[in-house]
Picture 1 (cartoon, rainbow, N blue to C red):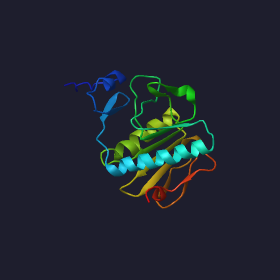
Picture 2: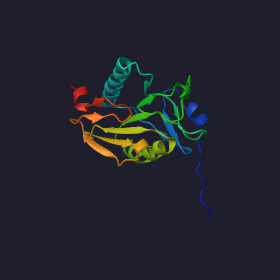
Picture 3: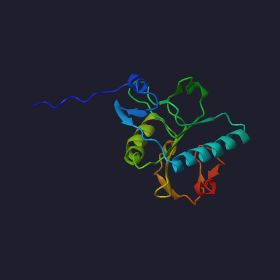
Picture 4: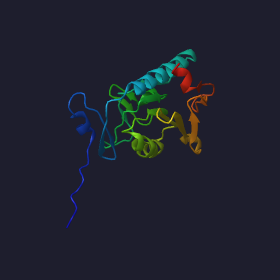
Length: 181
């Protein structure tokens, strides 16, 4: 007996979702997104402001976008993500709909419902797509996992109390605990 064929979703299916419902699309599989909690939102806000302030003070041209912000990772219609924070340095990737291609730096704040997705599925997809740096901020475990794909280094793990040097910038360090004071 043949197994039923799994449906392959497209970006059109994402845009057809009911108002207020969010999902991501990886290789044609749809992943529904649960509403974030307060700590999740606070981390997004504090990190986004910190990065934005650094960029402004340096007169840098990169741009910071917190979720929801559409990222079309590949040149196909079966991959669509909404990273918690996207830093894009190539303005040619930006359109009115979002970012076409890989952001330079992505930060995901882990939620209980997104743990496996953030650590495994997205990590692989982001590396393949050409993301330069990927941070997984895990409030429950009070740690950050840092991937620097452009230097092909092993992932690093740091606690919230440790300063983390941002790989795409020479002189930016972020200590998560300082942002939450």
